Image 1 (cartoon, rainbow, N blue to C red):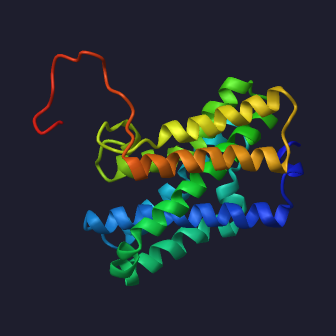
Image 2 (cartoon, rainbow, N blue to C red):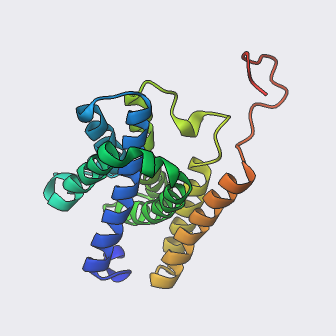
Length: 220
């Protein structure tokens, strides 16, 4: 399988856990801002950390999903939730660092998600879409559970889905031309990572409808 050739199983495992942990932190922080109780904080941490991979695995038929077969995947978001419950003021103060690691997780999961979907028989386009789902799906589930419009659909948020889609598309092209390897896959992940950081730094947003006629109150 392609992804097995990229990293050692141990390294892949720890990279996954790191990404899940940071996504879990972002979900738990949103729950605190929404004044959720401890159970709600844990649910949002789990949904954000595992939601994208869970959706991908269900679509491609990789059942039971990895989230339920690997105990570390399930416990890692709970550790993130516990950390936020007791230390959320301190965690809030390092939000910028959390965003950097979140961007790294985005880059990692859009690549590994695309590769896994392709390994399960999907075409390159569908695999790239599921790569995007792996990277951004947890955030969508988080926002829906919190009663918000998903961040990747909002015009007033820096681009999130676009960097993930670029990374997934780059991975699909690598597969197409048989150039998948540790260096090239890392480069695809780094591309998504850098694009996300640039979007945060320069407040890049996806364009809205051209010559739109209506605008909601408060929009710029």
